[in-house]
Amino acid sequence: MTALAALRGEFDALNRDYLAIHKAKEDLFWDTYMAVSDDDAGFARAEGAFKDFISSPQRLARTKAAIAQLEALPAGAERDALLHGFNGWQALFDSNIIESDEARQLMTELVALESELFSKRRGYKMRHINEAGELEEATLSGLSTNMGTNRDEAARKSSHDALMGLERWALDNGFIAIVNKRNALARSLGYADYFEYKVKKNEQMTPDQLFAILDDFEARTRDANQRALDQLRAKHGDGALLAHNLRFHMSGDVTRQMDPYLPFSKAVERWVLSFRRLGIQYRGATMQLDLIERQGKYQNGFCHGPIPSFFDGEAWVAGQINFTADAKPDQVGSGARAINTLFHEGGHAAHFANVTQNAPCFSQEFAPTSMAYAETQSMFCDSLLDDADWLKRYARNGQGEAIPDELIRARIEATQPFAAYAERSIAVVAYFERALYALPENELSAERILQLARDSERRILGIAVSPRPLLAIPHLLNQESAAAYHGYLLANMAVYQTRAYFIGKFGYLTDNPAIGPLLAEHYWGPGNSINHNATLLRLTGEPFNARYLADSCNQSVDEAWAGAQKLIADAAVRDYPAQYPDTLAAHIRLVHGAELIADNAAGDAAMFDRFESWVASHYPASVH
Image 1 (cartoon, one colour):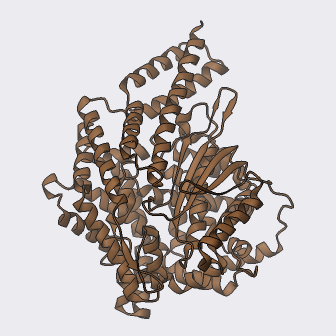
Image 2 (cartoon, rainbow, N blue to C red):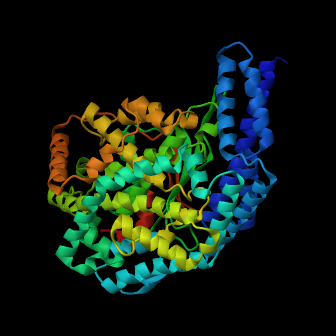
Image 3 (spheres, rainbow, N blue to C red):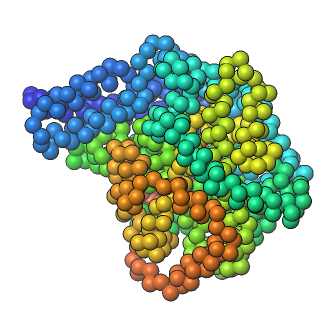
């Protein structure tokens, strides 16, 4: 056997072994998070096995040896492809390696602590007063939607009280021990604290580099944020800035008025049609969507891929991808939230279904995949939902009538003043987490952490407490997403840079079939083989630039409405393509736990009909 053939065998075995252990972990992750299984112990074991695989010093050493052997061989197509693949594996192992016995033991203990907290969290019940004035159990998204739409202030306050209760519950049920353990792990690896560890691992930057960007953005948007709060207080009184009232006064009535035009039952159809018309293809991926709330189910949308897409030699391995929402279809605003989740998580799925490298390490969501890079893909897709031309083409009521221009203007009047606030609501998490992990161990008490949370909210948001209190954000409790939330803000900066490029090149985004192929080529195809900045350079020709998002946040209502009017007018006379892709090139299953609601085996139209019928029969109040 030649040296090249031996290395090919070793490379194939590495791909195969990773796929098996990754899929086992992700399948159990889905079943436990969807409350289909209560095998928390099995999931913890699978998670531990996966961590052991990606942090194995032996595999890293063997990968480095393979790279050295390949570099000594003459260049050629097979040698170069293997070298590329092994370099991808080295990046993965380097990002996750835990070389000392002490650190490996700490990681094992951390996984156990987080598994225990997750198991307890699944049994924790939150209650609030709903639209009908009844006390009911509620999910995170249900609480948030109620605060935005319920006309009864006491009901809105009950939702916020539930979130404040969740903060206290997390602190009393293991979160402080997890923070301590995370810091111990980071320090055993030579980092100052867990925040520094995660930022360097995930984004390949130091905390100082990150906060140079965040501080600049905070300074650029500070006045716009304060101006919006002052206007809200002047219009509605001091009570408008109370946490339980803020979202309602920002958008409550507009959300309610828009509800008939964004019904939950039509969300899947509008997602599929819109993505098809963008030219987005999923390359044969199998996708499972679980969209509706359920007792014990994880209370936040997410996307993950049990089978990462890649080329296994000449053979294409299509992705297997799941994503979820926790919609309550008969709640006002649930349709808008559902379509947002479908575009966001569907954007993640499009990304991970289109990575065209030669190993699965390039197409998985963990380090060295940057969170900011991953979230750019999903947030670009959900940004389209705010575009006036998208709303005019897709937001229609039960009679087929398009959303009126005056309602689009009312929405801009409600949201544009708070564009800076919305982005600062992401930034505040990073400011809080940096300070949290910098606390000395003897100061890590529930009261000190809550004080730190409120101080962060007051400084960055300008209010006493956030409508979404910091410790009620589920990302902070999970190791993969903790100390990484700033990725959403970095991503949105890249989103607005990308939007500006496409608008400059084509003049429009909605239903533009050139966009999907360009995203697939420049952003999705490389996977994590290049960094986030390099993907932006490939498409836009410009390195990362935060100015586009800041400029958008600082627009006046009149400026934003003028832009919307132009989008509507241009769309009305544009010659859209006569033909779009017939399908998303995906096998789609819509499930509710273990129940299959509908699939597209007989075509997309049949799936849409079955989904609408299921929603109508289970949630008759949701049908307008």
